[in-house]
Image 1: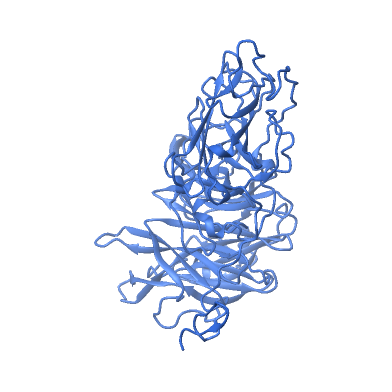
Image 2: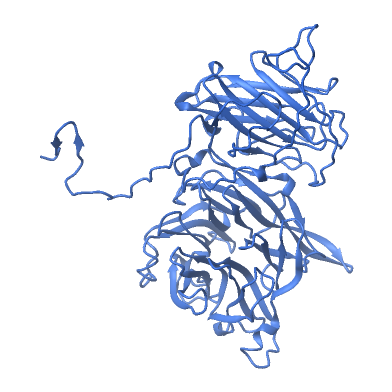
Length: 633
């Protein structure tokens, strides 16, 4: 990701319609004829469609499970904001968690300080303006109902929440007394609050667990059972691991299961020689269309010969809802796990799109990164840095089937009342899922407008470098591939062209490059290939004044110029802009195998891969060539 300037959300209006054909006109032709005619063009009413209006279809469950390696996440730069004091009550805002509630609004939870202090919340309807940011979610007075004369400071840490199937929001936080918590684990535990009105008001706090804990994270299964996973720690010995609470009544009552995820990490730091374990900061999901649960966690090990800790990421799995319970004796558990999968990474968060791709976020060198993984949360691609600012402990939340929102602190220092003070602001942005799309079979008019394309919902998105962004939609018939490009840009300049790159479906041969460039003198766009038909509307001018809206381009590319292997192409694009060129995050002009597939056929429901042993009749492999044959006989 590249970040060149602060986000600007104000759209300025101004309108100049310019319609052009890609082929250069002769001297006696109108400079902007309609393709196939010699008449003057008619004005075209043009609106520029944003990515928020597209990709609204639900699609088949796990539709992209077998092609997740061609899926990408792209920040929507226009959504990028930072939240800090005085809007936020915390000067040092840390450990942000964000949830989309049942009414479509959002809940942001954050704490003051790195370890433990106060927990606050804020609400928003649009992820831009926030209310109630000064409200405490967990406060010292919450302990008075459980302990008499609480003179000590009660600290709260690492809060998270879950939105249940009935719309209730359950919020959890680890708590402890400021003094003596190491000596008495019962002075620590997990508190819970409930909201039945989408986070507007909250119930009194309830202590649901006693013991030294960190980092609770909840999951509701398809059966409606609620799980609460948390770091189960002993600060005196350095022992930790992941424990589980269950609720079958939406959090009214809880049952402790015990420590279900752990691996040996060495011996106790208190000199006792006791074996200690790790695997902490758990975040669970239930995998799409399955009873299987995946839990991401971090593991903590001391560096050899030093007192410095080293963190790695791993995952643990169960297909039977942890029926075996905690591992016995000094065993590691569970049996299904990937230990230390990513070295020197920490603070995971895990989610899954309906289309199958899993997303694993984490800290790498104090920077927030995200990886796309397969539908089983077993294999993951390369990390993508999501935010520019350094900090620790971020999270992600799905907004819809193609969008997630990420939050992450950016640490800094400033002078407050004459004292140099550690501070942090919260970075927030939407990220769009780009993955294989299906072109729609129809023949659009080449009129430089999205008119007639309303039924084409599948779209790809570029827009992570600056406020300039574009969406790409495709159609096809027996003769042509059609590409509709809609660019939002309030500040058009002579540099603001675009390149379309189209490769064969099997990533072989040389790609077709279509260059579309501004003709600033005439206020138009021109195409470098006279064999193509193109029409465009420019909504503004190329004079670098901030009163533009962008442009719309429709290009018809003869199929004879393309190698549509397997009825598909691979697509890439470059959005040129004075603020810096932008392309799909993770793509280059040469890594063809990673380019985004566009299929020239209707989507079909994927056939699930059989699990090992499925449909096994015990007779070994068989095939049918007109008679039953058993190769083992």
